[in-house]
Amino acid sequence: MSVLLGTKDGAAFINEQLESLAAQSWPRIDLWISDDGSTDGTISIVEAWRSRWNKGRVTLVDGPRQGFAANFRSMIIDPRIEADYYAFCDQDDVWEPDRLESAVSWMEAQDTDMPLLFCSRTTTISETGRAAGCSPLFPHPPSFRNALVQSIAGANTMLLNRAARDLLAKASARTDFISHDWWAYLIVAASGGKIRYEPRPLVRYRQHETNLVGANVSWKARLSRIDRLRNGQFVAWTDANLRGLALNRDLLTSDAQRCLSLFTGAREASLLKRFSLLRQSGVYRQTLLGTLGLYLAVLRRWI
Image (cartoon, rainbow, N blue to C red; front, side, top):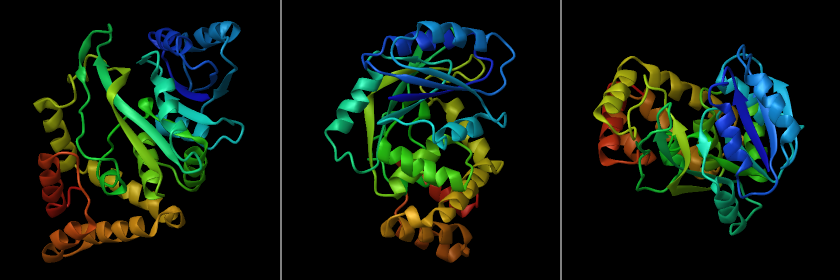
């Protein structure tokens, strides 16, 4: 098991996160920590843990210093990291003790030759650790048709088997990305891999007070998403995802390729054809309101 931890100026919370990793029921964990230019006490805390980590190895590397996505990408494509399972880790969360074991237990019951991705809900906590709700419990199954327009889980909840990580590394070597969680969901789903969305929260996801919105389903959160739609942020994210998928078209199943072509066509078509192509693509968000919003966004060219 390799845990890929990205850090930058995380001294305030990283010790609590590392304590939760040390308390994992999974016995063997090699930590790969990519520090993206910390100027606080993060490095000294990591070094102190290195001397007392008894679950495996701790490897500290210098990140590319180009933002969090590039930092995680550098670890995804690093050929030195060899393991049967790979988990992403943020510096300021807290993991439930069976976070890793739960994911591996599911994977061991699957065909381990195929790409497998496990993810889960999160419990939102404040800076002081106060619980503030849970992330949404999505009703529909994970799929490429959903991944094209929605990222359903944070990378901090994800675990990949070797086949999924090798696939993700191959795709990520060809392109950069905006968000490693959305990109992982897209690539594994597009290749015909299997994805488990666990309804039980396995990570306590720390939101800092200026961003805390409970379970991420408040009206404040919804209005924030509308603002991002209107200011073109989702268009930029979708453009980046589609560019990355185009560079990795050979990794996609024939069904995913057809869906991608229809969705791309819907974004570029005339108004009269836009809805028809979107309907044929079968893309969806996890709620009826979200899907209705998707159709409106395509109509207004907001996505």
